[in-house]
Image (cartoon, rainbow, N blue to C red; front, side, top):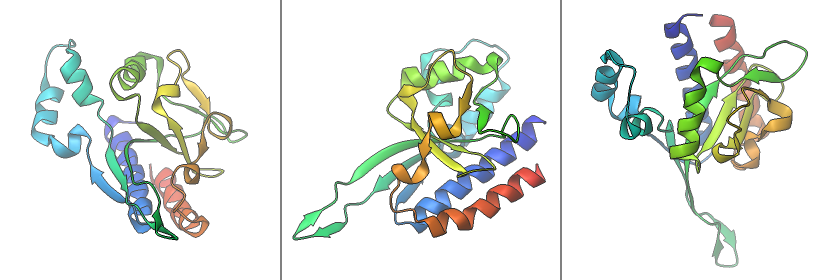
Length: 185
């Protein structure tokens, strides 16, 4: 699959996650360098050298979103704790139709995992896949540097484990969008 098609599939996955969270009462701010520093992103893509320093690596690997979970009253004058989270979204196909295994990155791109662990270990990784529960989440700092294939059902949690305001109805609503993305690309 071409780089452009993968990019479009990824952007669709990001938009689905953004819409689900906003619809469920979370505040979502685009944060990734392509969204907030598009001029710089173009210049970095045009660079002729392979080398990049830590600052560039940190900028290139910045998570897609900042998600704010505003405090909500829970009764008796108490409120939920307000949370601020960094969120990276990846849209991945399954390696085969018989299990929930997917390739997080190809071996040639293993340095991306290194950058996430080095600069963004406190962020959350969301993986959108076209089957089972469709939306999975894991703390970035728990990724293994040498592990490229993950099992969504065993190695990740359901999306709602962290984002508990997202209802089953909302999940079902957006599952059809995920199926369309994978059928289109």
